[in-house]
Every structure is written in C-alpha cells, then in structure tokens.
Image (cartoon, rainbow, N blue to C red; front, side, top):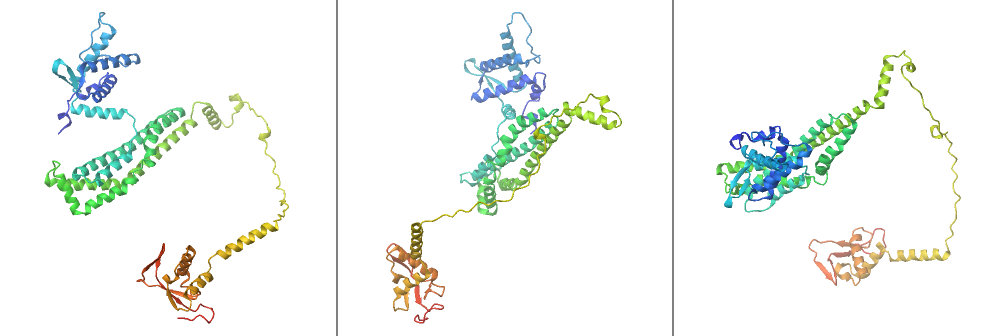
Length: 473
C-alpha cells in the first residue's frame, strides 16, 4: 500500500503555505483538544480555541496574511472580534478541506470534530518533535526483559511485543546519535564565543547531555538487564519445546501457521543481535559526543583568536610589522608603554634551608604501681591463653591409662571444655601433642548438652622429642 492511498494528496499543503506557522500552531492546538475529548471535539469549542489563538498571536506578528480561497472581506461593519471569529471558522474549513479533520453531525444538530487515523498519528509525531522530553532508556530494557521472562497465556504475543520494544530502543539510540551530529553542525556556524557558549550550555548540555547522554551512561544504563535478556533469548532458541510453544501461541495471534515459526525466530534473533551489538552503538554515541566537544572547543578557540576586540587589533599590528620589518613602529602607530613595579613583581631570593635541630627528648616516668598493674594484666592474659601444652594436658588427663578414647569421652561440661575440644582437632595431627586424632568418614555425630560434634577417635602417641613414658601406638 502506498502513502497517498492512505492519506489525501493535499494533506501537507498547509505546512508548505505562507501561513504555515499559524497552521502549525493550530494543528498542535487541535491535537491537545483531541487528547482532552474522548468522543470528539465540539465544533464550537474548537472554533473558540482557534479564535483565541489568532487573537493572542496577532500582536507577535503571527497572523493569517491571506487564507487560501476563503479570505474574510474587509468591512467597516465587522469588529475585530468578528474578524477573528470568521477567520477561525475559515481555518476549520481549511483543515477539513485538506483532510486534517472530519466533521460529524450528531443528535440535536450538534457538530463534532473528529480526527482520521492518519491525522492523529501524524499529529502525535509532530507533538513529540516539539516537546523536549527525557528518554528513559532503561525502561526499554526493563519492558523487554519483563515480556521475555514473565509467564503469560500469550507468550508468542509477548515475544513480538519485546521485538517492537527493542526496535524502539535502538531507534531512540540512533536518534540520539543523529541529534549529536546535528548539534555539531550547528555549533560550527556560530560567529562569536558568546554564541558558542550559549548554544553549548542552553541547547546541547541542557537538552542532550543532561536529559539523555548523562543518564544513559550512569543511572539509566541498560547493562542491568542486558545479560538477562540475552540469556532468556538463547534459552528459547536452544530449547525446541519452548520454541514450539511460542510458535503454537503465535498461530493464535492471526499469524499464518507456515510463517509463525519464521516470525518468532526472527524476532528472537533480532533481540539477540540488538543487545549483543549494543557496545558498538554506545561507542558510536561516545564518538559523536567527543566530536561535538572537539568541534565546540575548536570553534571557540578560533573565534577567540580572530575576534573583533583587542586581540584582533594586536594581531593586525603584529602582521603589519612582519610584512614591514624595516619600518618604524612608532611612526605608524601611537604606542606607549605602561609599567608598574611592585614587590610582587620581584623574584624573591632563594634562602638556604637551616640545619635540622632535633627536639630535646623528654623522659616520661611511669609510676611503679602502674607498671605492676600492667604486668599483672599481661600475666593473667598469658595464664588464660589456650596453648598446645594445655590442650595436651586436657586430653591426656581425660584418657588416664587408656590408649584410645572417643571425642564423646571428653564430655565437655563448660564452654571452656568445648573450646579445648575444638583445639584438639587443630593439634591432633601435628605429632607433638602426645595424642593423635583418628578420623573416620563413618563417624557418628555426638551430642552433649547444647554441643554437637563428630565422634572421632583419640589415640595416645609419643610426641616428637617427648618423654619416654608415653607409648607410641
């Protein structure tokens, strides 16, 4: 189907006429009333709104110079309000003539303005172009991941919607890239440093960096859902039953059975390719941003060197001197020097660094009572510390004359005894403790009071370098 099979051939004449600025404001106002009225705009309401628009824009010079084919004839009997009202009615007839609106007559002879399908879609695009809004890039990735991962009764429809959301996401990134390029072309057209700085901060930084680029690189980054989306898509592609379920669901969405599998597979592959190649797209956006920064800086530097102020005058003097090296500058220009000597203009003399003079050490006398108290605290801490000798004495005391006991025979009666049991595991294989722990994978778990432990065996041994009364087993 071709474009003008859907919409009238004269549809865009309004936006190409001499009155296009008025028509543009009128169609945007029309779209606002279209959104506010669900079942059609009352004809009188829209005519009054257009009349108010013509009245408020007339002082700014935005007027209808001559309406195409239906101008209001001048007359002394018509007041200014009547003229604007007549022009508002003419404006509505122009919109109807070129296919922007339709007019319906309903009950009680009430007239309503309705929009054709193509007109509402185009007005939506025009409104979006005129509005500077921040794009939520992470929203696209979140919606895509939600559609892919959530279990619904229509999984095939969810896959197709995820593909459509991914296309919108990629288009938004491409729009950001092309927008940066257009800003780069605009900044190099500026003719002064003030214009370059105003454009950089008021246009590029406020409308591109703050609203899109900075958020894309920081809080609105899409990497949070990227790996999850790729993993979900790959699971669908390598799992034939899941893919078959998607195809069967797609056949219930008015998709031909012979095209359902191809369409579902194509949608999954497109999503995978888009998010797999996302680094290339983000790198291209970074490259465009750096190109703009470089172009803006170069333009400002160029204008700074060749401005119309004092810098340019001095540059002209130096160029003239270079072309006439034998001429006397004083005869060509009225130059005089101004100098002023201050203490800050003089270079301070260097001073030799003085030799280092160390401070006199002071002796701090610690009272004998404080030293004794600290000594007692250290001895108490050492006496309470658990050492290998204390652990060995604890184990051998529980063994008595036996050569082999189990961990349960230690029978811990306090937290300190249970700590000794823990150190028995630690020192049970070092060969210096007088005992050895014999571990068994089938050893049961013993319980004694609130404590549980594996009931290994403890065997008496002769420690390395130990006394002869301990027998080796």
